[in-house]
Image (tube, rainbow, N blue to C red; front, side, top):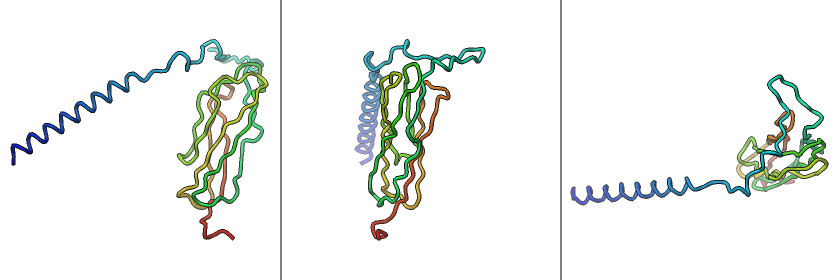
Length: 165
């Protein structure tokens, strides 16, 4: 019995070692292709060591509205809203990342440069599963504007299905 337990533990150790080796080797091959990378010449950062900024040439991220109230939402319902914006500046707008304050809120944003005068939207999906009462969530947008971050907000009152009147 002792001998078979010893062989069994060595077998598990070998399987674990091979599995971890394979995971390590495949994770090292995950690189961005040149097609996914943005060319460096489209990034315009006018900040200098002296602190001067050429604000006239900057992109400007201008939202039609930075707040949306979903109102009453039945628990378990998934709702979404598109925050419309325009680049009202004079150079390409690049949104580098968009993050939310909660895993229940998932943002989707344009990954390509937005030319001056162009309009797009940031879609925000909210999943009310497991939530109850008033909910306030934020979405933070990081871009090549001054200031580099902007925040939009969503709000909802989550009610149970039996509370519908």
